[in-house]
Image (cartoon, rainbow, N blue to C red; front, side, top):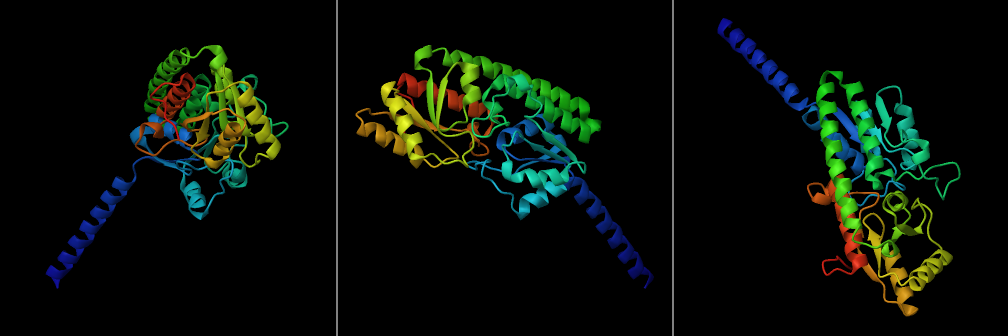
Length: 313
């Protein structure tokens, strides 16, 4: 019996040690949940091994229309840090996020943008256009907000977060230079960008493009017949060589515009797919913010220059 007791005690100690090891292995930093991919990418760049990063909305998901499901609410409730864009982008998640304020670190990374840098919403009076990530310089402010949130939740790793944020901002500065160099190949009169919805206004302001979207800032407002007619007339009158689809919006919306242009005697090309409200697949170049920006710029410039490597549909 004595020997049996020793065996049982040893077994319990072993199980206890295994349990402790398992807890340490699963505790790989603070849990950080981001609503959209471009914010999730910042979190990973700054947090690295100190966080467990999760994005609620993956590739092809439209944040304007997204409604949280039970698993999202569970993820948010378990998170120590919640990062969202704000400026009414995640409109259908407002109530859920609002209920978590005060119980954990919650940051609306776009809402710290100076008001004089924001563009007024053309769909909703008194609100701003939320798509600030299309201006690389403006998006640097979101990096600072993510760093502040991580430091607040995990001050022990403050130095690592701040150093990683500085390194990432240097990458963004290099990206901005690359973008400007590529766009410089387009003469000003060729800088006309026609897309499925009006998400690229910050891009237009930053890089001197005229931007036309079939739908408004929010995809919850559908384009009417008059909207299509007006856009078609604009494309035909200005002899625009290419228009673009978006990864989070059905292709048929732009294909209808293309067909209507052709009926009026102007054969406009679909220049390729742009990433607007969602990035590409995880593990691909377009699945990162910098990769997405470069993909968009290369696709736009190639198509408007009618380069041979322009991706088409």
